[in-house]
Amino acid sequence: MYKGKDFIAVSINDESKLIAADSTVQSVLERYTELRGVDISAIAVAINSEVLPRARWQAEPCLTGDKFEIFSVVAGG
Amino acid sequence: MPLTDKEFIRYSRQILLPEVGEAGQQTFADAKVVIIGIGGLGHLVAQYLAAAGIGHLTLVDGDTVEVSNLPRQLLFDDSDLGLYKALVAKTKLRRAYKQTGVSAVTEHLNHNNAESVLNSAEIDLLLDCSDNFATRHFINQLAIKQQIGLVSASAAHFQGQLLSIDQHVSPQSGCYHCLFPADMRVNQSCQTVGVLGPMVGTLASMQALMALQLIMGNKALIGKLYRFDGNQFSWREARLPRNPECKICRQQQVAPDPFTEKHYV
Image (cartoon, rainbow over all chains, first blue to last red; front, side, top):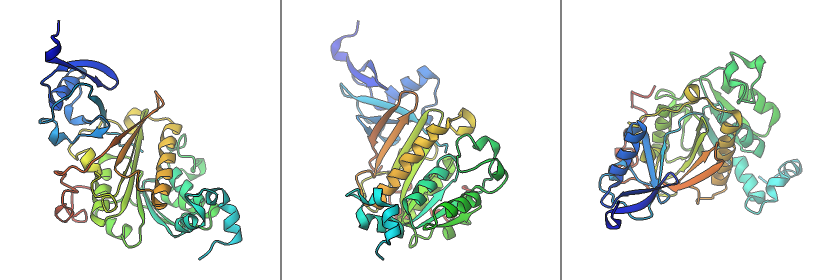
């Protein structure tokens, strides 16, 4: 079983998830896209209702309770 | 110029709103708005804005009316098939809303016509109702370069997005490129994934409302991304801060000149 100190609880598109406590936004998004067969260059993310630019994904740590909203471009009209 | 009695009666339900009043209605009458794309979004946005008494609309679209447009582009009917959308819309809006001046540009926005279409001294607001990612980026560059407020809306499948951009008014807020860098992969368009009429109409209505709010001077909406899910009937809101490393708005003076960019045609 997971040890509490090594994992933190976050939500990703309204689903509760446990992720490694040392996860970065980049690692979370890589995992998310790999599992779904989605290209990581096709997504954007808001964390706690603020858009985080791609250039900051690598350095951004994750905190307990973070709410990830992952979405893609909608370009139609 | 004060409102006439006829105008006062016509717009009475708007003037009743304390946020609008007579002064706001006059602001609408003085406003000049450019709408890029007269499809699912643009035809309805144009209609709402003309009906509300916006002074002048410029409608930009090089497409002609196709039969597959008719389930969601309600301004057009079978008799319009093959005609330029911008011209048909101009004719019908002029007929219904005589107080609004309407110009039609029957070309897609490109680097050759952008300068004549967008003269910042003449424009109060730019509305992105286009249907592709490259044009959306081009419009964003133009808006940033010319310091014109921009409302960008989009819809495909059961997803919609809405965003106001105006770094002149709100310098810390982001632009379209801060949100979606130009090298992102894009999968969703109405042509590939489909869309229902009311889905794109919902976004168009919100875009028109946001446009009127911005013209009224409501700055609170700038720099926020609104996303609508038409399956779950949920709206999400996220702040869009300016990305200090954004290639387009980082330093306006070093952003690529949209009038000389060759790859958006």
